[in-house]
Image 1 (tube, one colour):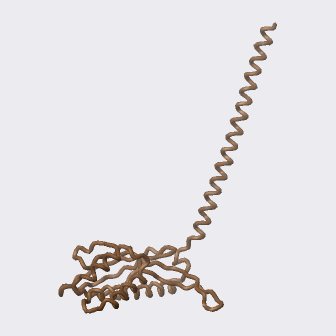
Image 2: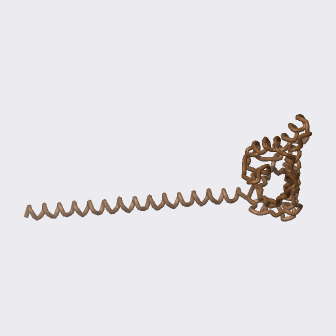
Image 3: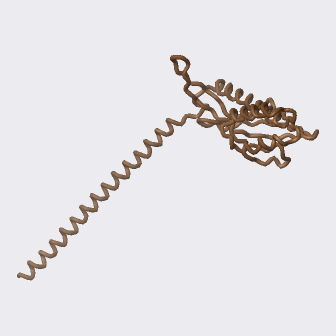
Length: 206
């Protein structure tokens, strides 16, 4: 009789252990499920906030307004090539060359942006600062930028401008298709007692 009771007691303990183990497992599963759900909600919420913050320029402006800014950037591209051409003019004095270089840097978003090396027939891409130095010792080069330009890859802060450049060097003409990134910035500026947002474009890499 004592043996029977002892066996039953052992079996009962075993059953209790199994039940306790199942309860703990269920609690862990419930905790993990809630944690995963909370993590997914947090990731989804952050993604939604990020998507809301990143509005592309063609969503922010009407097609007409955006095209006006793009056309304005085309003028800056033409100005840049006019400055490039001036640097190859040996008759330009040192002070004027310095002023031209300063104006080039004002047009570009980054002085080390990669640009096409029009002083070389290989048309490799080199940093803007290096290109400027090569222009200063180059034979005269004439640049003509096409009036027609195409725009694509519009993001929240930039777009690509596609145009053609005709280079005349040593009497030989060559035409190159160029795709250049144009950056768009909104800068708050103070005018007297008022602060207004000023929109500007800067040239990027080719």
